[in-house]
Length: 336
Image (cartoon, rainbow, N blue to C red; front, side, top):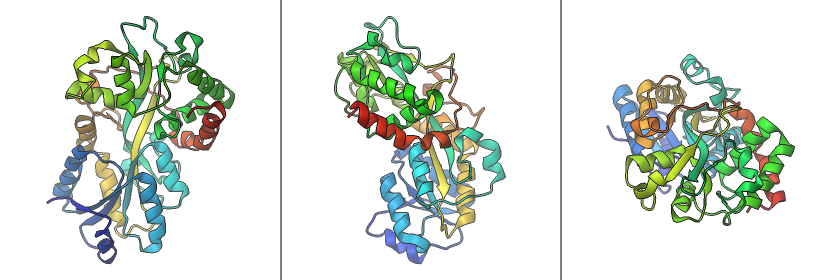
């Protein structure tokens, strides 16, 4: 069986065939070709066909809201805790009861009301130019120290990864310390915030930056296959998992929940439970260089090369609620 991908033009046809034996309608903002294996394996194992609509997270959330009680959406899957919490706040998800998910997904990686669950993780860590930096920052807070003035590259404040990291700092260190940190990072910028995570790593190779922050899967991907402007010189980059003597490395989450008016609710729950299986968890790691959410599942070679580390086990649902405060701080300190 083959996963069906519907464009915006023809996706409306789902509305008339939303309820059917052996169907689950997935709204996804994950745009990774490697996820195709996840979908095809689920179809083969269960006989349930996945109908898929892809788009940006906020667009999909707004679409489900607009569709209301007649929405064909069964599952929303997206990247970053803040977006999952945004979907919950928008009323487009529902609480579910699944012993499988409760037992396999760590409590800090699931919503307190069981409206969303995390299925894969990326550590957001420090990377540095080994030739120029002999004393790399050991914690996130160290990045704001004056000794790194003119050395730091980072993404813009509008990026969800930036927002969630600052939100975690608020949760772990308090709002006042978080503001001091943001002020210090702005003072230490080597260039105006720009580009994606891969661009932060490329900045280390080009010499524009000496220190940067990025999600681990961008680095692991460049270890596994050729990434232009990065893989050929990747040995020049050093890696630091921050705060190993404190809270641990910040984890960015990819997760999913059952849509509020899911016409195929039981199939939707089966799909989420499949995502928590060893098979699916290993494929998140092997196909997209992510860390499994389920403890004890083996990591892919590219991810395993990063080594063992302590992860921050802060409750990510609480972190997500700090995003408005984080954005306020960004605005106040002039982080573009």
